[in-house]
Length: 250
Length: 249
Image 1 (cartoon, each protein chain N blue to C red):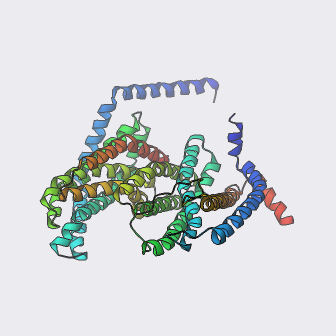
Image 2: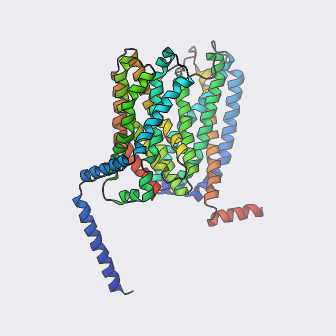
Image 3: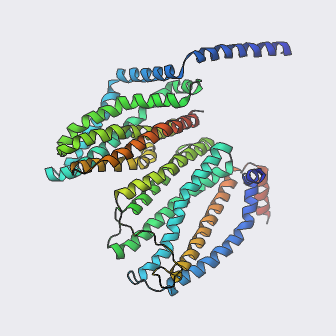
């Protein structure tokens, strides 16, 4: 190959690059964020099982507590807050697996990594859509299950509010673990081993808030701590997930 | 200024230098350990409340303090791995994880043996015990992730990232657990005064033991890092030469 043909090939490639680049510049980060969110929500809505499974899992785990502990209302009242919170934690952990996997398998995750958009917002969009699909229904179902465990009536609003603040933190932390393990053959258990210890603060604060609410204690501190955790994980966790995705996909 | 830093990153240089450090470290550790153990077990006066069980402290506190240093060490090594892509940092991080898990387990076990006579129970869901247990889980997570990823390079980066995330989380976990429950005696303040219940005749042997166990930690870390270096660099010429030399001896 002569030098001339090389340069002509090179310049052609550069032109193509510039054309692609120009296309990308027209898409604002916000538009890309919205498009990713919309796409993920649409895909999830078309797969009903993914919507139902976390809910069913949540329901089954909560109903195991009376079977395993006792049917005595007083005893159940005492463990209700913790039982609902632990079950919500496990449900959000199990639903995490399909956060990046389908995209990894069909290659669209690679496209996302190659795009010129900041990966932080793309990962955040995936996180938000995942939480809307699998986290929010769990939060909404929680009061019903709390009723089955005889949670005192004063604590319902605290349960819903702490879950609303806490389950996004669980998904955000979990996403880091999913991103690290997305390329591995068997993920289920290793994901739980990595992520569960990280979720301890959320569980402690959330369950204690519900318990304290049923005792009529002030809750300002609990909510501020959960809010702080949410703010911290919203700003840092997608960065870590993005870095982890780059490591796993490369 | 950065030259020494990058030279430190060369596995070959580290292997040669650590070979020179090791005998000195062994001597130092043996001296500190024999003085510390004899002093702590035979000459430290009995505690007015806890009697002879106070002597468990001379193993428990050093081991626990070093196990706490393990996560920051892995996180710093992780940053070096991700930023400067230094292989040696990852080898150290890989070797530090199981050693740290062991130290955490020993701290939990000695704590249980100490807790039995003093609190009347082997295990309590007290803040410090619980946060040690969760640190143990975090270390197990890093080890599990390392063994699950086949490619050495990807495992290095993934574990580096997880160590950094874990290190950011460790203080949050610690404070949330403390807020949740506290039974453990607060860390005592050292005092120079002779009449203080925690005077020099108690804490000097403790400091000696802490240094001794630190030496032990460093020696274990260096030995296992040297193994790791030989394994990963087994195709490079200097390792081949080294093994040829060893076998002709």
